Image (cartoon, rainbow, N blue to C red; front, side):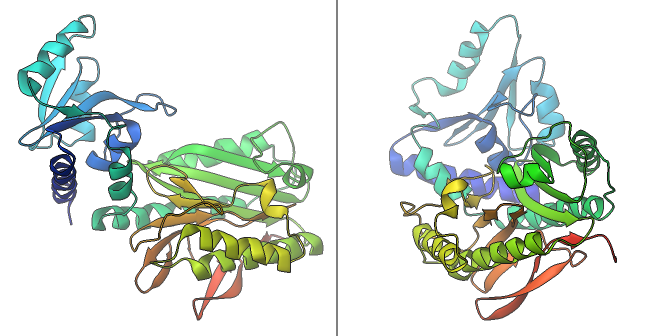
Length: 363
């Protein structure tokens, strides 16, 4: 499927929702939904919550409305001059002219906001299209390859800031935005679950985690490294792998997220850490938001084929995190490369290799 076909399928889905809910159109202006619909970037800054132009979808038109600073650029480069979209531009210093433009095509129409249809948009956004799944596979493989190759070359004395810079450089070279980047060396990996980088030099153990975004889709993964073997860290990581396997074994269409969560929590208890799940959220549904839904005992969402999940069980000096796609034939690990260190697990009756700590000494 090509991008334009994907766009048309999504527009049809939104129009069906509008009809059902009694609206004549909707204004899409959040970065998340803008990228979901168009598969283009609507932002200027990486932390932007809103796109810098609005996409209006009515029963018979799709219109991009934006300031003269960015509207043409977005249309040309991010929307690839989509023939189904009309471009309407207003001067940045005449903001009132925006209302005139919108009225020209939406007068007397009942236009919904994203808040009005928040649940409906969530439902269609979190079940990935064929085009989105293909893009996610490519993104997952490329992001994991970058992180793993860097991790396998780590040397004693490197600073956390240096490593973060190298990761950012290589991700951007592949058009992947590092929207979340966590690096912890040695004791910081034991102490903190969200270790944003500091001026700290590597002695032996490194934990690296990212959320990487490309054209809206976000992949999450974490990799652990030892310069020299450490039995306790390896043991903690194996326990995390078994917790992660418990999540994955329940992760199938028709099961509630709360059931998946309960299975992982139970495994923490089996491993001897019954309350460890309280130290850090365990991940959950992902896609166009790093965590569309955090798994918990209250998560009633029912898993569907075509959804992506990233669980991230942790213990001190150990974290396991990969992004997986739920299919009717089992799980597809989007961040698997086959070029790291692995531990074998039984997932849904199949033997699956899961990344474990890469020990540099001896490799």
